[in-house]
Image 1 (cartoon, rainbow, N blue to C red):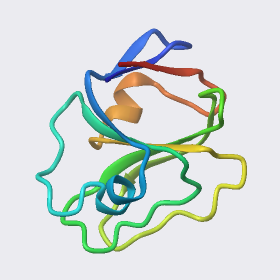
Image 2 (spheres, one colour):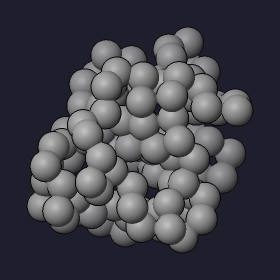
Image 3 (cartoon, rainbow, N blue to C red):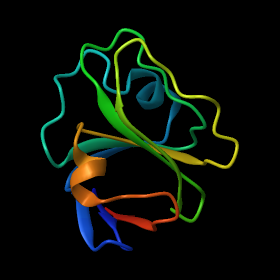
Length: 114
């Protein structure tokens, strides 16, 4: 699916998977190659991310139910985890550098379409 930062008019990904069932959420990027620019995974529901077992860093955005960014974690490294994000409903994992290059910030509106 396509994911876009509507506030900044920036494309975040054109090949983003939607992990909206338990097996897809459990797998995430484990045992997958490092994502290329334009790839990512949108986890729903999700209030926290861990990088245990990962071999590469990711940018992570947490979004509320409406798609508003509630927190950003650029370059989350293997072995790290985020604190619980109580206001989040979705987590969007993207290649490192996506947050910086798009200028995405807390409060931005993210939209996706299939």
